[in-house]
Length: 109
Ligand code: FES
Image (cartoon, protein in one colour):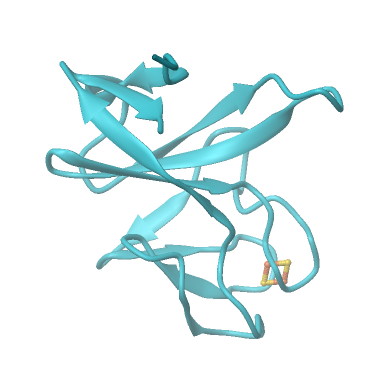
């Protein structure tokens, strides 16, 4: 049985907030934004589809409000639960990764 990759403890993420998590890849690693809404977690590549910049305004610091995360560069907004673009200059949504919360640990499926 394949073991899913742990990303972080759910409690490390502020409720209705987000943290950055770096994962290892064959090409040298990738940074994710991992968001929390209550007992649910969502993960996306920390890369805005508008101009390819990171979403955070400072390393690991994200603007999350009203169920949306806002890119700090030009203000595109994305729905936390789906990654869909809901405002601003981006024409597509965030690229997500499936995650699950098992025993308080957020894991890639
Ligand atoms: S790079 Fe994110 S809105 Fe432009």
